[in-house]
Amino acid sequence: MSILTSEIQAALEKQAIELPSWAFGNSGTRFKVFGTPGTPRDPFEKIADAARVHELTGLAPSVALHIPWDKVDDYSALRDHAESLGVTLGTINSNTFQDDEYKFGSLTHEDESIRRRAIDHHLECIDVMDATGSRDLKIWLADGSNYPGQADLRGRQDRLNDSLREIYARLTGEQRLVLEYKFFEPAFYHTDVPDWGTSYAQVATLGERAMVCLDTGHHAPGTNIEFIVMQLLRLGKLGSFDFNSRFYADDDLIVGAADPFQLFRILFEVIRGGGLNNPDVAFMLDQCHNVENKILGQIRSVLNVQEMTARALLVDADALRAAQVAGDVLAANAVLMDAFYTDVRPALAEWREGRGLPADPMKAQLESGHQARIEAERVGGTQAGWGA
Ligand code: PSV
Ligand code: MN
Ligand code: MN
Image (cartoon, rainbow, N blue to C red; front, side, top):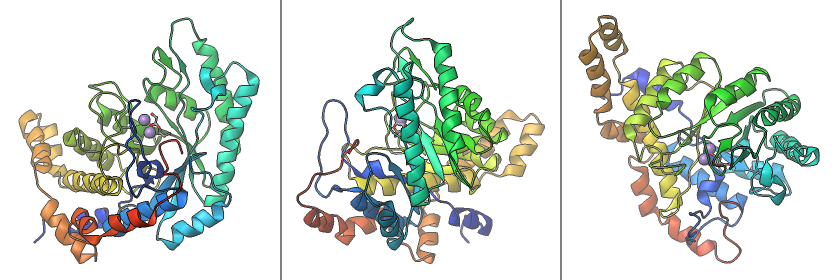
């Protein structure tokens, strides 16, 4: 009998992880962007790559877009294209971090005309959402300052709130706003939305459909991220995850690569807090593949999330609770570690096969000739990159 009980299988069956369109474009560091053959030349091809990941894993039914990187003339055509490949268009990510005007901020800017421009960009993103059928608008701001005294910290919070209120008021129906925080970079002294508390304080003033986005790479080293997950779920304000992993700063590496145990702990708190397969909590990746194959990198990522979810689902909740109540520190820790150390890969492979999916999606992609085909097809044109 499989170690994956029917309850666990039912939970895994429903798991969905949104892929970022930008993961399929070329990306790099400020030192070098390595182009790779077969890289998509437009948003249509990025979506085709994302659909390939879903086809092989059954785990990634939607793709997040970044505007203007994924700007197209006809969003209904993009939507039809996605749907014809078996995926939907997901979160719309705004972008106020690459125009000269935004050098000193966007939604927080002192200059009303620049702040207006930034608000208008978000309103246009909501127009895109109307056309794509997307539910979530994700806002990450590069706003901040580099030197003490450079900026009026308080005034910027007030303007940010004013801007967010206007954007939120434009949402209709099921649409939501998720505000992402990040402790530093590109600003180094202060960032206007540096932490979950600031994001929470801002979205709490907007309304029920404004939530916090937690990017796992956006915390200082040593931060107990699972505690934040617990707290936001408790407050009903965890809107979405941007999963990735980091060794140093905002590395955007494959989720679960740097610290699988941390991913396990996060997923344990997600399950504990009722956040698994909960439509209010969107699972997304926010990653870049600078040196590895991008489609395989995304397959590896969603499998890592699935594997750690399965392990977290294996935690014997009753035994854990009993040990906690009894004050049995070592027994409680052992319950958690037993689940973490369980190798679920063979059971997952078998389960996948039973659902008509390849037992090993990485191997299936490698042996399929798919990469060679897209390399042959995608000759000419300009390859998309992080930022195009
Ligand atoms: C910048 O830090 C960033 O990685 C944020 O995490 C956003 O989610 C992402 O870029 C896309 O805008
Ligand atoms: Mn992010
Ligand atoms: Mn980031």
